[in-house]
Length: 176
Image 1 (cartoon, rainbow, N blue to C red):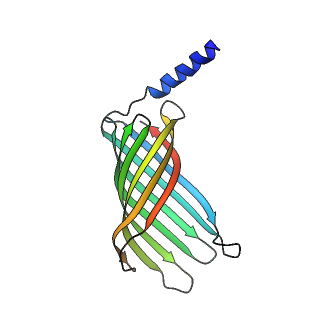
Image 2 (image 1 turned 90 degrees about the vertical axis):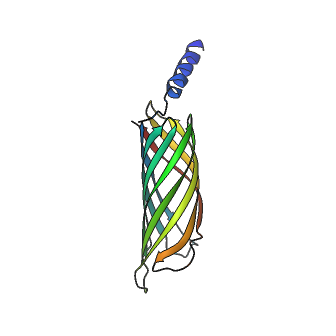
Image 3 (image 1 turned 135 degrees about the vertical axis):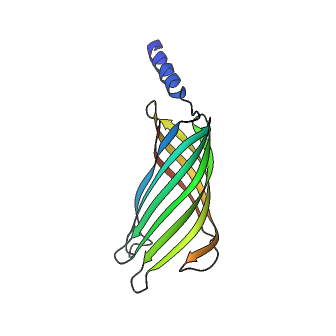
């Protein structure tokens, strides 16, 4: 029992000993795949998303992020590809963090029977997460986020961008 407690205490000490200091980098991101159906008779829509992220600590605990994301949605006849790029930041409270980002996204849509269209838009997001240590420098990143569109759409679509998205993501982060 005492040896088990000593091992547990040692592991907790090792995993909490990391520090996000100025000059450190976090490299990682999220990836997902899902298959959605509106109802049992509808065509299945396959959604694949890859979102790499590069973070650099400008001061202790404050990370500036470069964000890139690509999402494809396809069914039997239609497809939409969205590419987004942006900047953000996260502040770390040990393994917990809170942050925000701004992104510009461009979507290309090919829908059967309609001409191809292209739409651009801006989005802002707030996020909070927790890093679970897998090893000394590798973490599972669990985060929740709320993303909101702002401004007007560009390209082939007109009107105000009032889109909203609330979600949870999981990924990996590696500390350098």
